[in-house]
Length: 382
Image (tube, rainbow, N blue to C red):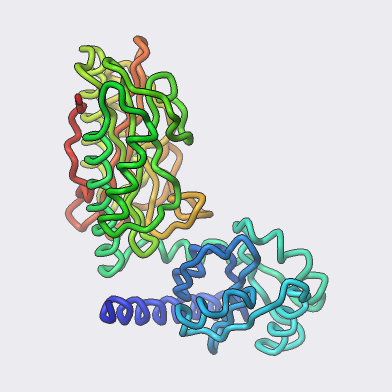
């Protein structure tokens, strides 16, 4: 554990240096980050206290400063050891305190880049502008997100560990399902397997749905009993050190109809076409084109307009990495590079009422993409 913490600490120091280099290139005196993903990436803060304002101030030179509620002091002193911490009380004027610190760091007329793509920006933008009218405000959105796109070997190790937990969760869920078993019983076993395997609480809860709710993208279990002939879906992610590895499988209670097996075959083939196309040097749109060509040839309809998105660090309420999602869609010019990790997915429906959702966590290596989640991609029957 000490070795892991040491590696993480060294990586964060390098990330802060890179942000500072970008600030100097752009003429930014201080970059301010407010999303939990970016603050974790740069400062190592892993907690649930981000429902209140927290802000990481990264100067072009010098030590970063973290503002957060005083009640979080024990957590921050233990986790965020590479920053200066300023705690505030609930009745403090936080904007004024941050403005004062910005002046201290960069003078009376600082050039400040705020993270405008963060939901927390609404808590700080207008008050900070009012408190520091002499500043020039820019945008820090995308600085850390672009860095987070390419995973280091250390980060890949964490996601591989998360992927192993995803497999354990999927196998447990499918193995528990059966005639007369409720969705919430399946969910309970998925959580038992996740926690027993060492997993953290993920950004999304496991999505567990059956029959007519298969088409709902972001709902999860009910007390409904599965019966023989029912299709059901599990989409979930293991989580280690806030790194995620999503995957999904579709299954049947009892024997699946032939039409569902046919749809599963198409889904699997399109999935593999996308995997084969996902390699360094191509664009995201090229991957989408290869995937879509296989679906078009089979006359089935995709539920989504993309076939995946980048994943890595995430906090509730999502595993997509917070703001700045990069999807594999038809108009994306994002270049594919080694070290990227995607939630690669195929979600399709046919004219007979069948649905199939198949997804995996995949790593882009120099020679192409590889599956990190390993559970069989054949249509499961339990």
